[in-house]
Length: 72
Image 1 (tube, rainbow, N blue to C red):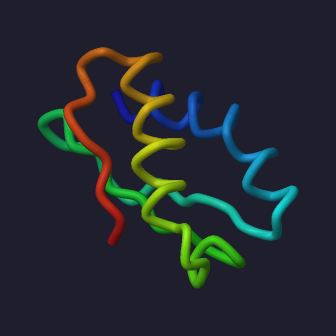
Image 2 (tube, rainbow, N blue to C red):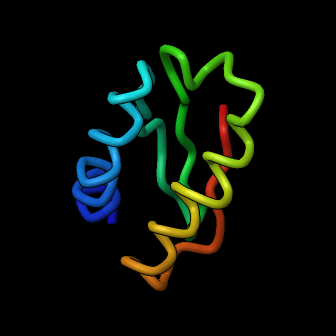
């Protein structure tokens, strides 16, 4: 599962990196993905929107077993 998630995150990364940020996979357990937003994304006021409406939505669409994405 972790490899699948990393593959999907690699598809998302260029968009985040274009704005000076990035996402780091921390853990995947029981359908819960834990990530760390870094760079500009780590301090951005819109980070929660990026996490929920961007990363989580894309991961759930690509990997139906994903229940939610959390920032750590």
